[in-house]
Image 1 (cartoon, rainbow, N blue to C red):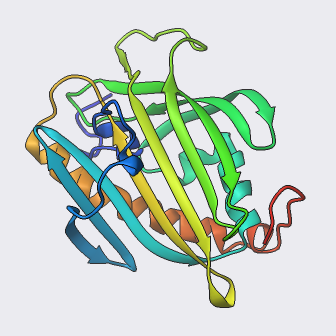
Image 2: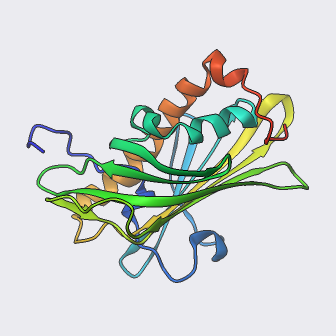
Length: 221
């Protein structure tokens, strides 16, 4: 990675930049979030415990739930919308709602890139039809690469709740350990730039007819 690369930390998602505790972020108290900023229709919250940052994004996107499910299922295309993800590939498809995949994150020079293998599951609430997509880092599956830091503690969660007029209320929780010490400027940039860039790119892709018109048999709209 050369010095000419952008000096912005990946947002991946900061699902991959914050440290994992023994309990997942979404199981903890949610009344101490601090609003970082509101811009482009995205609210970014964070909170800090000791030296650990957690991140939450809130927004709304007009697309069928099946469109979201399709986007999450297209692992090789994560490089098109997830900020600073330089490589992503499916390792094992367990079912239409469960898989293992690999992703590599382009960290700014002079920091080493990070990578990780995630076990991902998609569930749907029987009461609200909300989609809940969770991912957690696992060991093995992919050889460790030279000069790339393998992350083993990470978790993410998307909560997609259908509303009126085809709008989906989106909540995204990011919580993981990037390994090594990160400078304050990198943390600040990741809390500000990465989340909004990811949502911006996601909106653009989901606006395409292929996602707007998607209907999946295993998803209730």
